[in-house]
Amino acid sequence: MNFKHRDIISIKDFSKAEIDYILHYAKRMIPYAKAEKHTMLLKQQILATLFFEPSTRTRLSFESAMHRLGGNVIGFADPSGTSQKKGESLADTIRMADSYSDAIVIRHPQEGAARLAAEFSEVPILNAGDGAGQHPTQCLLDLFTILTEKKKIKGNNVVLLGDLKYGRTVHSLAYALSLFQANLTFVSPETLKMPKEVINECKEFGVEPISTSNLEKAIKEADVLYATRIQKERFPDAEEYNRVVGSYKVNNALLQQAKQDLIVMHPLPRVVEIEPEVDKTKHAVYFKQAFNGLPVRMALLSLILGGKKI
Amino acid sequence: MKELKVTPIKDGTVIDHITPGRALKVLRVLKIPESTFSIVSVLMNVNGKKGKKDIVKIENRELDPKEVDKIALIAPKATINIIRDYEVIKKHKVELPEEVVGLTKCSNPTCISNAREPVESRFQVITKDPLRIKCYYCEREPEDIAEGII
Image (cartoon, rainbow over all chains, first blue to last red; front, side, top):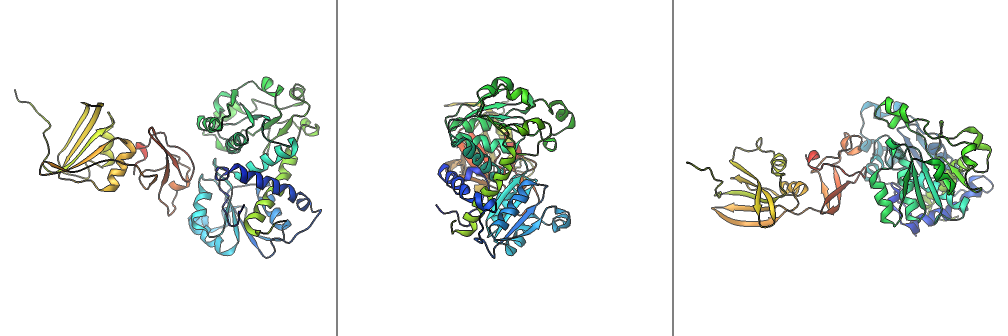
């Protein structure tokens, strides 16, 4: 399988076999991610991180991944000091960054920005989130977390909870989990239900997702609970946001009804969806999930830039 | 009593088999009346062999291929008849390409293709009947394709 110079724009650009390959390669990256082993695989290579929108985990883990592989990083975390503020087009910014680096990571508030960037760049583009669109590396690290915690993805009962309408991570995740034949239950307030086109995509893989607003019932059979934040910035008006925020809470009382080996995941940042008391339980894997961004992104960078494997 | 009939045209284009009710959208796509001083006849809900249809006749104007592609987006079963001296000299069904470039805008206001970038809108055709297209950039499907036609 050859990933050299390939763009990472959408999880849909990858076959099941390719995703499997990346996830298994990511496992081999764990000791390097933890600095138990060292490598200079990407020595002399430069990664440009262009963050037109704020990010903590994604940017830091991409930068850490590049450093852990012996490479260098240039870029910005805030577009206010860049030519974009002077009215430069994204296409021109990309042409410039392309000539300064070996790969470009981009986060942008507009959907399709990474796809556009790939058209103007000679070097590979890695999409770190485009508005309410795709966030493929988040999806890969979520799959990686389920795989490492549950040993397999297929057949797990996965409950996706919260903002299923605007949340970009849950759309790609529902698609990818269907590709891997997981069983899906969507739990959300009525106004934040999973869009019909996402449900149809799941059905194309033979998966019949259950949609419900009853979390207590759904939690009993769940192997994985994936909670998401109600994203204020994606709401058209504040009134709708205030109506639904805090409508579901994951706490110890709820988890008492769950299977012993249920894992609770969250792409973070969390606000009120998961009570801090859950952090200490064996169910909580969301901080491990955040760490998993590192080996997964190291695997991707090494496959795209290195060609040589660890 | 005088009867007003829609008569055959001498030169021009007849767009037949338009999905019933879509004739006015076809006119909008062709930028009629702004783009022409020709006589244009519109027939709506005409009984044809395969049920109801709309027909548009434009005198003294032959459609170019790009205009025909646009019609395919709103009336995928339409046929284009080019008329010269009362004779049909060319007849073909509209055909949608696999990829629709620069014909219709993405309906997602935050799609990068609607920003000030040096790219044309681009859609992949998912199914032709019923017509479903998906934006190459933001991967969304517009609900009303005719609404976005450029």
